[in-house]
Image (cartoon, rainbow, N blue to C red; front, side, top):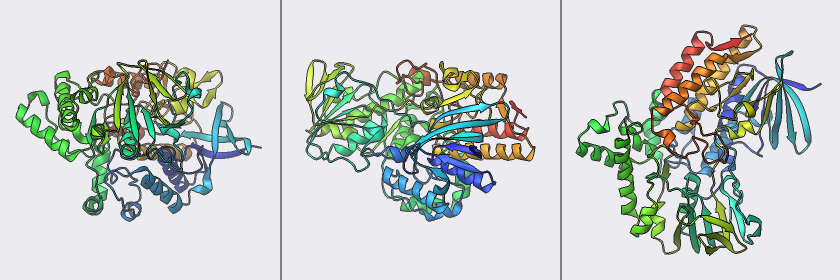
Length: 532
């Protein structure tokens, strides 16, 4: 007979670990399934050179245990991947989480049984296939965990080394004095390029779309920790109610187009000097008024021009085809300056597209670029990719087929037709438009309270009502359409995946507003859900 659990959690990243902690506290039998050999999720898999968080470390951390946040010393304002992974491992050790985690195990299929109100879950590990049942399945699969791996003609012909940033060798790669090509200039590409430029012999960057990037002004974090630690509870409460899930001092954001241009420039200068993703938070119309957006965008382009000595290269690095912040902003630690090095060159794929790989390198625009190593920073099938990779089935209905034309959820937590399947930071929640740690903790706490309520009331099944899901999908789409966000061919829209329906997937209404909605729905007995 198959082993039964109250809850099966998919993924042992920050979502899955915290979900395990909370369910254990409430006495729910819980098993976590993790494809990797260790905890950490995104920070387990993404080991490429320069990998670093783009939210300040004091915010990109758990808040549920004050002793934990008091004892962990962050070394940098923006922690690098090794430090974040050590933090995740510290949490796993501190709460003895590994005993309930099955590593090197993937969920292949989950089938809902209407008679028993249970999921039958098929898992695969090195030891073979295993089937268990669970009253609830909680997908903590992450928003950026399914790599996008486009195929280039001739990839198998290349005689050098090929690496993907999404699965970079754990032991690292010695790139000293080698000729290296990097394909992709999103966040992973920028971080990789910045990190390897000083050590490689030659670096050729293949850029399809330039990125807006603001400086990190990274540095030691000791002073910031001393400032925040005494007031952590109040600090976290403010973050949880803020639009982005981290604080940007936007209590009274101004309207750029109603502000004196001298004051606009002063505020942009101030935020540029501070650095980080709060750059766009000073004016409330940046993402809804094209004229305001153009001013902010031109400010950043001017900064790029000032950093890059070659005017022609600088213009190629200046984004012009989409509104600023309509794609994920990058936080850089000297990215643009690398193009001043003699060993770095830029290939604009808009002018000279990649034709194929050859035995010696990459052919673009009729020119063969000979390299020893190719690093592909091609991103992820964001938000829905990891969920669609698992066969969630209820009778004839399969989740990936239902979502063929875009995700359909209620609150980003559940989808009609799939009872007792919950998603942490799923599509149509703030997720990737927020500090993921803030959103993770909110979702996990919300799910835990729901399961407590189900148990207390003797209920075994919960599913959104179709009209509630329709309303939420429409709300998510309508809010996005009030902004400039859908104008970009971004992974927010699924535009980086060939054949994927272009739909704006995150909830753009803000973390604080989302929390108020979620709390209200729970307070009135989970309005919009059918419970039995």
